Image 1 (spheres, rainbow, N blue to C red):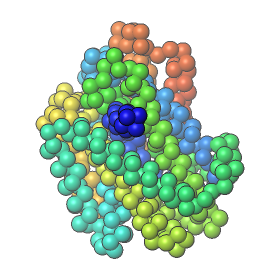
Image 2 (image 1 turned 60 degrees about the vertical axis):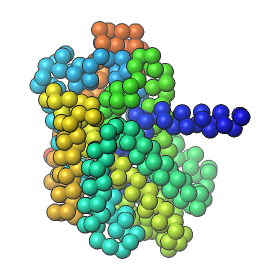
Image 3 (image 1 turned 135 degrees about the vertical axis):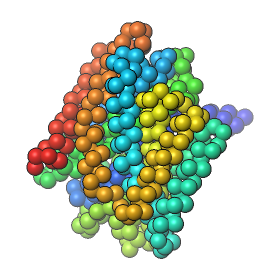
Image 4 (image 1 turned 30 degrees about the vertical axis):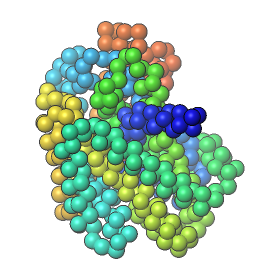
Amino acid sequence: MQKNNTIVSIKKRLVSVGPGIITAALVFGPGSLTITSKMGAMYGFNMIWVVALSVFFMMSYTEMGARIGMVSKNSLLGEIRGRWGKGTAIIIGLGIFLITSSFQAGNTIGAGLAFAELTETSTIPWVIGFTALGISLLFFKSFYKVLERIMLAMVGLMLASFFITLVLAQPNLADVLQGFVPTLPKGAEILTIALIASSFSIVGVFYQAYLVKEKGWKKEELKQGKRESLTGIFILGLISAFIMINAAAVLHPKGVEVKSALDMGLALEPLFGKITALIFMLGLFGASFSSLVGNATIGGALFADAFSLGNRLDNKNVKLLIMLVMVVGAVIALSFGKLPLELIIFAQAITIVLAPMIAVALLLIANDQNIMGEQKNNITQNITCSLGLLLLLFLAGNHIYFLFIK
């Protein structure tokens, strides 16, 4: 009887982690996998603290986004529209749509590459097939429930794949713990900035306010909602740490260079056999396909809400715009075979302006007594999230320097 109750409790817990798991899955894509693998391969265990720092600020902002979503009567862009006008809402919604559309090709290519490598075939049919699969999910009656289950499955696949690889790698525990002590090896600045930028996703945080509404959580579920949202981000941190530790334990001692997420999987084969490489490739697919669907969902939903066309995932306009992001990603992937440098620069340029702007909007709304009531930010939350804003401004400054000055 006790065993049955435990199983029921676990099932209920898994079902309730939806919004946080979705955010974690869409944030951790092939780009994040590449950066964490590269950092582990180049600098060993020294940079694990960067993962912890990024996850700390991501958790702080995700809790705030979830709280806003559960307490506010309107959507987040609706609150922004009411407070600062239609123009501000359109700038944020359109900006996020352009960012997600720009990076969508990378997610599409990552999903295709994983299976193309496993089957030794062209990426083209896989890119088309996985895009069609993503679009087909939109035709389910309850897209949110389908999205939740898919993301849970993909996160589970990533956790299992990278944990098994970790067990095989057998890292030294003392070295792993030492990696939580902040150090900055010479030449690691650019990758450190890239890892923080990919892990501390303010766009993902922004959409968390929408996901909790899709879940149906309200003020009465605040405690549960905040806890489960943070659980998802903690899992994001675990996945990132697993990959960095794998690369540090396996690739760093041998001086193996990582240029893409695919390189990490291929490097494992001669060391641990084809099965290990297969397991890692499945993790790469999980990261890519979850971002393919989640990234498009954010872009489509927020674009629609920016122009007052709806914001719920069962809305026809929202589904059409989600489909548009997926199609754009597939077209770019098939045309170029990779994410063009011009698109990366374009997306980064928009992010420079948009990320701090979104963070400021979240902070102001979270401190608005009329919207939040007794659930407005306390002093500790304001200090933590203000430090996160300073970090975003620092990242923006560095982006400006590397893109336009250096």
